[in-house]
Image 1 (cartoon, rainbow, N blue to C red):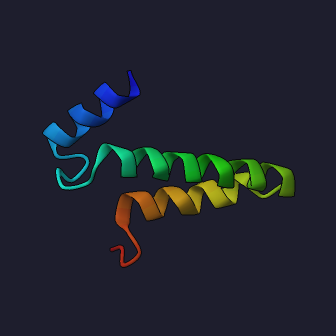
Image 2 (image 1 turned 180 degrees about the vertical axis):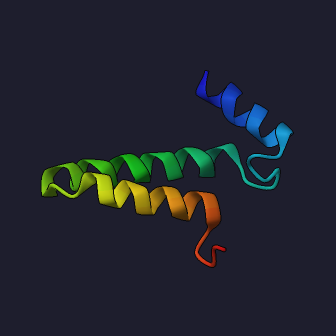
Length: 62
């Protein structure tokens, strides 16, 4: 189901077509690992807000 969602996002341009399914899954796995770490440290909301900005706007942002 997740694979289908990723492929649809690629078709619609939400995820760049050159990015492989495996890379997207690896990114999601890495974010999940970070979330566990942040939850233990108590600054989950702040860190997730930063991660969302990175995912939506990239490192350069605007």
